[in-house]
Image (cartoon, rainbow, N blue to C red; front, side, top):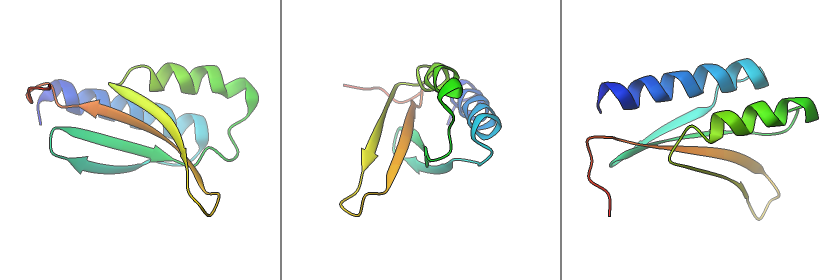
Length: 84
């Protein structure tokens, strides 16, 4: 993983932790990192800042499981990995 990707992930991790009071879960995949965090407890006034952090990555979204659990996620592509 290149320095740019590591720096982007560290910045997003710090910002999301500061905004939510919880550290996101990070999983490493071939060619990208995925940060996930439970959106419960994010106050309405914080959402514009959360979205600003999410927009710093390659892709983002929100998922809901069949059990009703939600997570917002941020994908940060590895700059060294060619993408199709």
